[in-house]
Every structure is written in C-alpha cells, then in structure tokens.
Image 1 (cartoon, rainbow, N blue to C red):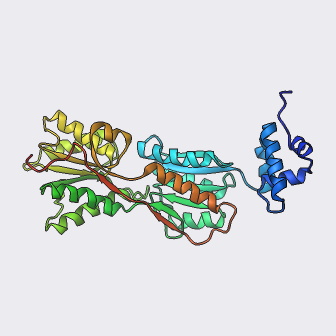
Image 2 (cartoon, helix red, strand yellow):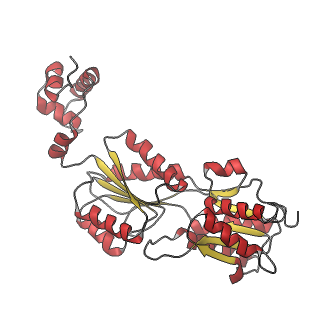
Image 3 (cartoon, rainbow, N blue to C red):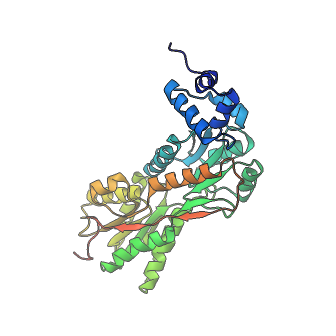
Length: 337
C-alpha cells in the first residue's frame, strides 16, 4: 500500500505482457483496440504514471518542449504562455521557459537548443531565427514553430501587423483626426523584432489613403515600457502643434500615453485620442480603444501545431494567420469633441 504502481503491475492486472503495456504507452498500432482500452482502464485504476526517464530512453523523446520568449513577464507574452500551457497540459509534454532579456541571451538560447537533445520541440515567441539558426534547427531535426514572427522555412502562427496598424489609424481618420502620431519600439536588429515596424507601416498606408503623411515630428520610438511611453508623450505634447491622436504599438505603451496626458492636464479623449494594440485584460478596465489580437489563442494554436509535428516528418512549413479586430472604447472620440 502507498507504493507507486509499476508497468509490471499494470501488465499483471491487465493480463498482458510488459511489452504490450509499453506499446499502449507509445500509441503503437500493433495493439487491438480491446486490449488498449483494458490496459488504459487498469492504468486509471492503479493511478499509474509512466517513468519519464525510462520512457525517454525507450522512445528517444524527452517529453519536454522549449519556449524561447523575450521579457517573459510582459503581459502579451504571459497570455501566449497561458495558451501554450493549456494545450500542453493535455499532452505528455512539459514546458521549459527560456527567458530572453538581452540580444546575447537570445543568441545563446538558440545555439543551446539547436546543439543539444534536451527538447522534443521548440516554440519561439517574437524572436525570429536567422537563416543560419534555422539551418541549425533543421540539422538537429528539432520541430520548431514560430509565434508572432516569421521565417520562410518554418511553420508559424502570426497576425497581419500592417493591417492592424491600418485598422487603428483608419478608426481615428474616420473620427476626423488628421494630426495623428505613432509611438512604437526602437528598431533592434539583434532581437529581430518586426511587429512595431509593420504596425507603423500600416499607419502610414492608412494616412496615405487620405492624402496625408506621417510627419517625422509625430513619430516617437524607444525601448518598450510605460515609463518610456510617458516621456515620449511629453515630447509630443510639447510640440507647437501637438497631435490630436496617437496610435501606439502596444497597450502597455498606450497606458503610458494616458498617464502622461493626465499628468499634463490633457483630457482623453476630448483633447487626445489614444489607440493601443493587443487588448490585454487591463485594456477593458481602463476603457482603452485597441486592436485586439488573440494572444492566448495564438499560443494554443502554436502548441497544437508543434505537437502535430513531433515524431513525424517535418514537411513543408505552414502559416496560420489569426484575425484582428478593432475594439472601440472610451479613449477615442471625434476630433475636437
């Protein structure tokens, strides 16, 4: 009593050999359905849990999936991780988070994952591999899926960031705004982030459709974070003709904009309209108009796509494009309202 059940216990209770139990554990087709169901019932009755180390030796798998993610405490990353974790919870795989805070850490994590045999698969959030890194992953035979970033040789779950920037800007244009600023992330080729640049491109395209341009004084970029957004907003509000609206590359930035406007006595949305991007939980709480992307669903979709590829020929890369939606709330209003 109290001892953990072994594979031998399961085999004896089910009236089969240990090899048959092993085949059931490994989803082998060489077991009749009646036998499979009988073994599974005994496993449940005995509360049998397979020894992961032993199983790894017999299957060649580690039952562990690596997730490379930048700034893992960022709300958008956390939401994706929740989606990944939910899907993996129903599988035999554990999640190992490889947090990245600097470009050097990014390079080190990619090298370590491609060089070792610690993982059955890799999910990379927002950190697109270089061509050489993609080749290393392929040589290692490591199934890899990208989230929020792209490489032509790898499957990916993405959104149309250009369209997202257009949705945000078009909403403001339809409200009569013409002095529209954009606030995003500073370009950093070593991180290989691309979302902010593409959202700015969408902003510019929407303005061009109205015969307008995104003037340089109305563009502000810097490291991600509310404090930086606060400072950049102060700069915009100090212009001789400040913007009447600001499109931001994230909800986190939008919150910094709103804080700066409140500190300066500028009313939102009467004097300044603000649009975010992501639709984090806090966005609804503060009434932020934003572009909603399915963060948690993207994590789940990426995890399912990766599980489908583990133990199978890698095949051609596929792309899943998720839908975006503008969510109007209290931080936008007609120009001059």
